[in-house]
Length: 582
Ligand SMILES: Nc1ncnc2c1ncn2[C@@H]1O[C@H](COP(=O)(O)OP(=O)(O)OP(=O)(O)O)[C@@H](O)[C@H]1O
Image (tube, rainbow, N blue to C red):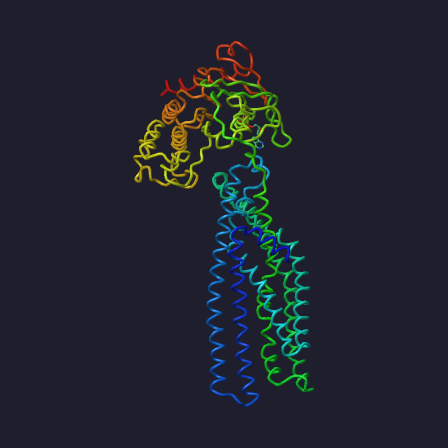
């Protein structure tokens, strides 16, 4: 238990100050509450000795008043500090997790479920936010309160004091057993929470496919199974803890009854004054009041413990930006030397070497799954190479600070993600200091100004989740405007013309031209025209460079490139035919 408390205060970091203060106020509150017994003692003593006066009554009333007002004030102060400590701690931790995620290697997201990250930063943090302090303080206060009371009983009778202390000790023994049991179960409960979160995310993300294939019933089953699993684990935990809690209650009640009985016996045999006997009788069932209410919470300590482990696991995850420095190379030529890379055991890039001189256009072509996206992602250090090196301006990408590397690179993906924020904020995402005029200029260059202006809220239109309220081609152009705004010297482009209608395609091409003018371009290319005009073409097959050169050089060789050109020309032929038919 002490280990859990220490762990918790360490986890709270700079907020632990608020918590220590809150705990201090709670202890004062308990002492002030105990003053009610002093008032009772004064009254009972007066009654027993039959000399109760207005002065005695006034004294008892005064003590009671101080006790009640003091209790309320310190309750208020303690809760203020609890709230401040909890919410600020979780704010700090959430920011820490967010910052940590920015610098995690992408492999982390491959090996850890999205549900885990989501449930840690939402459900787990909410649990910590809402109950951690209450549980820690209540349990500590419960133990301190009962111990102080038990020891204070020495004033009346050491034998009674020993009975009360025995109750506290027995309670703690049962509680240690309960903690041991819940320590086994808490991680399981959190696991169930993660699985549930995964199932919900999967359910929402796959909704379109589910509907398209009339599989609503079948897809429901995964979610329902997960809900059922969570419910079962929660029930199991409840079932396991109830006997312990019942045993705790029994122990405390027996100790209280024993103390009451013993005080009567001591009074009868003349070793305890009547006043003391009465005060023990009155207080026998109040000594453990705080401990009893804390009893239910002790069990939750292991939940907090397990929740802290989960948050710390993310906060201890490897960081990609450990040795990087701010770098400003004179030139920005890109070089890959003998690069190999695997996703787990699966080798995807196999001893690739290439050079991309500054200011040139390189088209990367190859069959689906050959490793094109992975190759360009290695340049932007989304992943670290297993062997070999990637250099920009002669400096290994690992020697750049991540921010300093990404300052030089803009990426336009096929699957565009727009934040659920205004269009303006989405465009200036990488350049927060840009003015509205800068945003409009970039939007005009990316050919999206007209459709943005036609929206009722214009640039202030808030994009629906994942950009759902605008078309795919429009999303693409907004992402190009974002890249134009960033104005990085290297552009990595996953050419996304395949699934865009012809009208949008022409606009998109103009946007891409505006973005790439005068830059170093690495393009996963699908359009024959772009590929033909590239300064060099790299053909990737099974993670290796199978061909490399200009269009004129490669077209003469038999191989993937000639097949690619043949296929594209045929596709254009089909288009012309279709047009002429129309
Ligand atoms: N995050 C990942 N984790 C594990 N394997 C991956 C991951 N991303 C890609 N792969 C695998 O690596 C291989 C190369 O994928 P990559 O996306 O680089 O190919 P590609 O040539 O760009 O394909 P496409 O043209 O279809 O987009 C594929 O077999 C793919 O399944």
